[in-house]
Length: 89
Image (cartoon, rainbow, N blue to C red):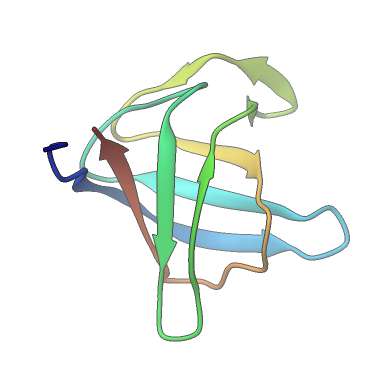
């Protein structure tokens, strides 16, 4: 039997650029790396996606540490205060 995926709260959405499909994640609880799978959850939001790329101040990065904010392309609209979880198998 497969182990249940574990979700760890790592941050929250602080902004969404609808014309770019980009969300800003403030990492308050943990790190985030390209290749991680995240779940974005809020009162109107609930989807899972993998992190394909991230940027800080228009520079591509492969990892963002706790305490930083990073921009990433999101599959669906996200909203301020949506929570971001990292999923580990």
